[in-house]
Amino acid sequence: MEKQTVLKIENLTTEIQGQTIHQKLNLEIFRGEIFGIIGASGGGKTVLFRTILGLLKPKSGKIVVFGKNALLDNTDVIKERCGVLFQSGALFSSLTVEENIMLPMKELAHIPEDIARELARLKIQMVGLKESTLKKIPSELSGGMVKRVALARALAIDADLLLLDEPTAGLDPISAEKFDDLLKELQESLNLTVIMVTHDLDTLYALCKRVGVLVDGKMIIDQLQT
Image (cartoon, rainbow, N blue to C red):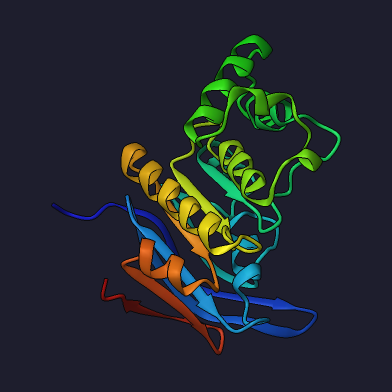
């Protein structure tokens, strides 16, 4: 079966304050894979994520997501089909878990509140948390629970592509392993495509068959033996 390309980056060059971060970087991600990105601190991993998300404009190059040019101002493909999990979880501290999960449904998908509330209940169950968690605020959650809630929010609009920034950072080994198992289960059941920045070698070997190493502004692709 021919592989379907979900994201393709061609000759991407990015600069920040005159410093070149990526130099004609190329990358192709296929449907249904979990792709890991590694590299030294300051090597451009976060900048690449922010560029894919449209938060930074590259100097040159092309980013195509689900067949659409993501760099065009009138393209909403990232908002409509991509979910993001930031390293810290990035939950809104003043909102309940339920409100955090509902937020992208209401703001991006314009789903009515009663339906969004029911969907939030389903999403929290999907990531293995009890319904009672919905009424808590982030400060009442453990580190592992914050990651799961952030994952539920990333899945809120039924995203086809997930971008995860250090998803197991700050978790103890047991919690990290449980999160890896959850992510693998969701990826297989929902046929998700996942791009993941991580320093966690256990997570890489547990989830990824291909990995991209950022070196000198370029991406070197390698196959993992699992």
